[in-house]
Amino acid sequence: MKSEKDDLSLIKITRKYATEEAARKFFEGLRWPDAPFCPHCGNADEKRIHPLTPNPEKKIRNGQYFCSDCRENFTVTVGTVMEDSHIPLNKWLIAFYMMCASKTQISALQLQRQLEIGSYRSALFMCHRIRYALKDHTPSDLLTGTVEADETYIGGKRKHVGGGYKKNKVPVVSLVERNGRVRSNILETVTGDEITKVLRRHVAKEATLNTDESPLYEKIGREFAGHDTVDHHIEDYAHIDESGRLVTTNTAEGFFGNSKRSLDGTHHHISRKHTDLYFAELDYKYNTRKFTDGERTEEAISKIEGKRLMLRQNGRK
Image (cartoon, rainbow, N blue to C red; front, side, top):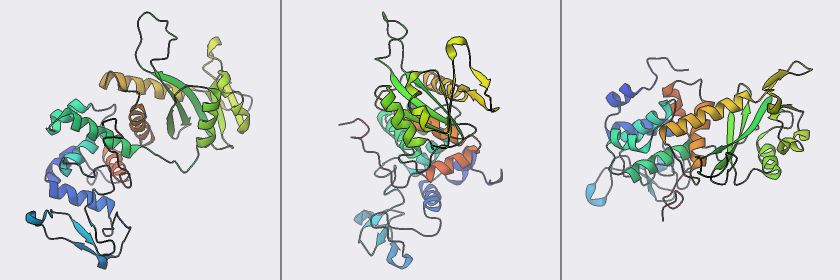
């Protein structure tokens, strides 16, 4: 844990990393704590990586390196979510901090105004790139202990249909490790087969599953060390079982409540296509809730490696 004096803050960013060159050195220090390595071929031999002298005529700018192995030029942004971005690195650093420090979320319009970004499209793509960096694309470990599983639907109400109408909404299943992490999964439809795939992918067999009375979890629940349920129909929201364990899905429902307030209050509407990115940000903030704002920002920047989000991927032709 860093001391308060060393912790990153917005005022420190604006004082210490106000220029693109200073921000570039900050990103290099986080990505390459020992020495630069080539993102093209993986070469980490300091003797075969050379800093280039800036030369506008040859289109060589500050921060460019040359790899003698693959004979490619690169900068600290190559192979990251920031690659090929024309937005200065000092604005990228502030954007990372603003999104990570916000207890809810930051709208692209707010980012565009406060960072003086040329267009809303650029600001929105910047936000999505940061969310893409926060996303755990291939989690390597499983959730353990007591894991609460629940589903919700993201989207507004539609006129002239009943409250149970969900065809205009996006199903989200979240798995919350009691006193630990959360993992959210965006589904096309909520079925027993889809729920089974999600639980097998993310939850250890030794875990105890807590769910509501939905039959979706009945069959897959037998594969875990325990499966306890609460029955909301009889207003059973939490109880102690015979072994003394607390049975509840209140943690998962609380996560959904906070998530919906954050999305509704900031964005009012999000597209089905990008729901996974918004929940990647929500999951990340929940999982780093004990971090300081500065620690959360630096951890986020450390996750940019090997991730690239293209305009075509982002829904632009």
